[in-house]
Image (cartoon, rainbow, N blue to C red; front, side, top):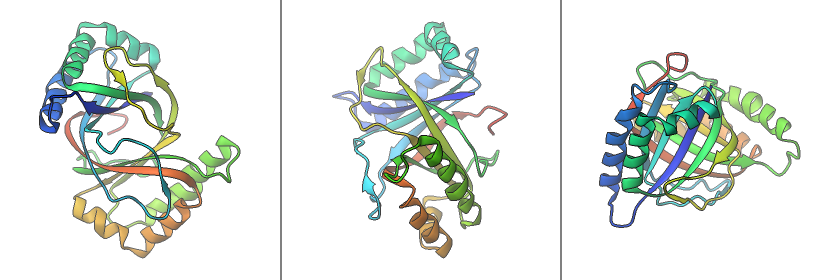
Length: 234
């Protein structure tokens, strides 16, 4: 199963809260749509930049993230052509001015609990220059680096997502941003616990290893405002 991950920036004349409310309302059409096992709408929240890794060029004024699970790209195309998909697209275009749609595959290492933690982090990243081969990078990220998360206090879920490609926009402008190779999704019970996690010896060792694994990175906090989670993911 794939996941379509969207970075969204509001239209001119639409404020942040109105954009988020419009997306949350429009996403209700996805709840019962055929071929859509689940979705989330998330408010994008700024985070301090990491000082140990160069920042990836992603606009800081992204307002929201949306995830839509589908069996494959054909199922996603069928969704967009359906009445539910048309309703979602119209609601999205009413409040969004620019978007980027990434096709990603989840590789959960620490599965997210069924009672979903309310605080999360989406870190967009590229491989370190020492990895000429993508598979070597994935092996290090998903195994060598990934397994370290299991010892990190306060972490309630960790889901690396491998970017498989991008899809063009149909109703809004393309969001200008750097190419992304992966998204590391981390979950916490509170934003405060995420800050506590950063100070632990286990997290410091994990981040130090990450500085030799990732070339560029840009992290956002996130708060889910609507969600239907597929059973095999929940």
